[in-house]
Amino acid sequence: MTTKKQFIENAQKKLFLMPPITKQFYNYRMASGAQPSTMYTTLNNLHQFFSWFCNNTPALNATKQTALRVSDLASINSETIQAYITSMLAPADGTKPVSKNTINTRLMSLRGFFRWLTIESTDPQNTPHSYLANNPMLKIKFKYGQATLNAKANAINKKIYDGNRKFNFLDWLQNDYKKTLSPQALKLYEQTEVRNCAIFALLIASGLRVTELVNIELDDIDNNQHIIENVIRKGDHEDVVKYAAWAEPYIADWLEYRNLNFDEQANSALFVTLSRGLVYRISQSQVERMVKKYTKAFGRETTPHKLRHTFGTELYRATNSVIDVQQALGQTTDSATKIYIHADQEKRNQAIEKLE
Image (cartoon, rainbow, N blue to C red; front, top):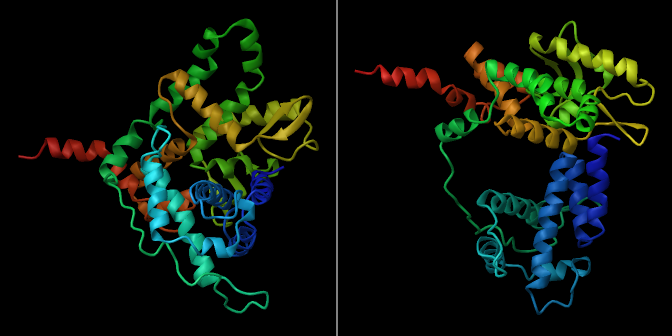
């Protein structure tokens, strides 16, 4: 089962717990090309808001959000949204405040939902039809201090595995780390060691997103030419991905190990896992947990996305081209790629030191 299918199935389960109108919103966004992972996050954010709304609106007849109707949603105004923001910034139960980044993400989901209810929705005959007359999100301006590109780049540089650091880490995984394990733990570790090293190598050498990596098919990789075909990028764009030659031996070791230990007919995925005698495609969450576990043990905890930043930073240093980095990372605009200009702080700092 692919990650995309899992997101769709999880979204369908979530919709059973939500107001009926959200099903139409979900179908509209999916038909418009939204990513299943994005829509699953959106549904989670809406579910959280509807739960808060039901619990904090005594006048409602609905005690559960599944009973919410469009007429109930019409009672939501800007003051409702402001109260919701306040509840996240200063929870009444004394729990930890929600981060401002998370608040902003939740509000973006609400903006999309209420924009659909007031502007984008149609009736069964596909003619424009607004479910609500007023959009409560129009006057909501939640601003928070964002870090400069320089500050963001400095944070990235503390997490990436550039230069020899990536090779030191992979060598540590294959040698020193194993010395810290008990005989039983070592036996379990060695069952996934070759695969995990290949995953680390490919993430750093290609800049792939985790969702892209876990959906690679065995037949799509050419380890002689160092390319991966049929990669589905964000926005469902198909791409061919090139990876650095230094990753070849790690991937070759995994291909050999996979060929000897797993039947290709059992699962077509490049990276697989074994559970109760059955072969499965490795999941996004498994890769994320694996990256966190081993990089934390190494003393430089990071995430798969920071490994993607590693590739982008090193490629920019080698090419000095934002366009090359943008294309290699499968990004459709250069707005997200500009961070790599600032990530190469060493040259700038040296130049500043030499100013007279």
